[in-house]
Length: 74
Image (cartoon, rainbow, N blue to C red; front, side, top):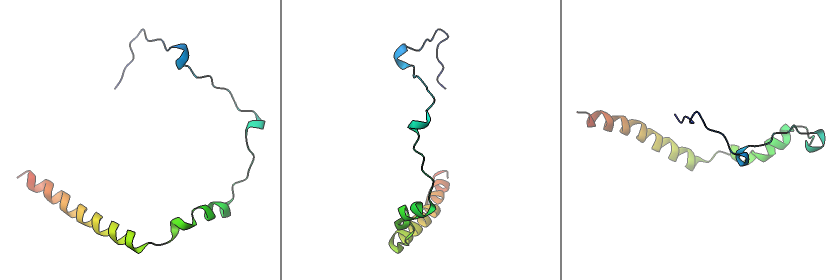
């Protein structure tokens, strides 16, 4: 844990001025599920090569690493 000294004073350059946004700065658009679905459509396409590679590497790592850990303690 990092603790600042008791006499710590932030410099003027490190201070950030926070101001509320007025309505002219906010773009008013409604959320569209159709547009969101269109944006991520390619992410939902099944890719068998990626699936099987991930399945087997996770399976091998999930069995091998705990075995290696247990055997290293003996």
